[in-house]
Length: 470
Image (tube, rainbow, N blue to C red; front, side):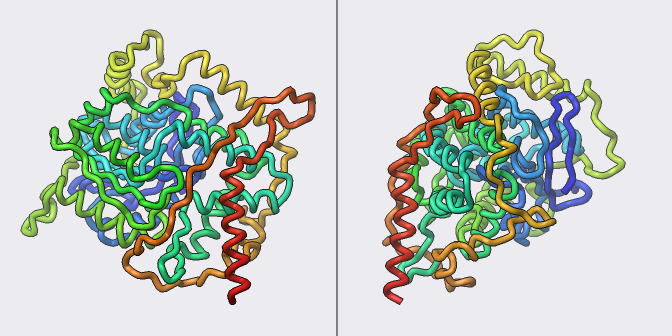
């Protein structure tokens, strides 16, 4: 896939689009992928013909995700991610006069989307949240995942973590007749991505992704100032965030949709990731998103371009590159707006660098940079699963996991979950604990979380029971 380089920020963003040349007669959708995923896992949206013929669609791998190239930096926060996307759009010809709708998958993307709507309100036409969360709770479970994943010494240890991570991401995803709503192939693809892109010998990259969880959310007052139409979809089987979390966000988005407020729709059986697998995407997420887009931009059957808010701009090899002055013209007003909202001094900050948008304090930046150095120390010698010449694991998750082998490859799926599946309780009771590590030793106390291990044990128990019954 192609990259767009942000010269002033030392970042090269990988991106995916459904066009080779930007069509100004169509509206534009910016898609933001989920945590620990990449633009490849937005395929259920990109490949849906209901979108393909009517919208320009574009997505970027976020920092330290997928094929994006960047150095880890303690300044990174959701404002930096938002600014990077704006500069990338400018460079690709989707210029400042072209508005777009946002499709945001999972918690981190939610935070990026809100900041885009906050600082570039004139460009963001609407916000569609596909699962929401909260930084504090997510940091708790991430601490467990990181210490078990980042310091794993064998494939077996990694597989223990994978088992719990799959349940967190996709839920138990079984219906009343025990049919899975996530196929073996979809789980294999997710696990292959994790093992290929963020194995233990790249644990500093994992931390850079997860560090976004520690960033504060927008204040209630800031959320109340979001004016765009907002739709939230949230699964009722989320392991960490119950529906009340989504309801709470709806209550805070008082100014959305011109003061009418945000809308909420529940996805039966949905866990953290509902934009992927295809079961939830095709039956719940994509139809609801399309309905929402039509409510924001009503279609006229006599005019195929009616409702399209984009009227200019091209994306092609002949599109003239942006100059630093043009990029500064887009970033500077937003930077000044950020300074006013947050009460910070941005004098002296480079208006052509996305790092200027960081709201991380100098103290927090130093702590994060020190942690990144700790995690990077010795990571080149950490366990790394064997990969083939295409950079993929030699064995699939389904070839190593009895739980996966017991699932049908192409399950018959009823239209709705009947609600009998109990969601897993919250986990993440153990945080990373700095120890008095000597030279050459792991700098963290590796204490598996009781709740996380219960999640893994639940999978093993279910597998054993199924085997005995059969």
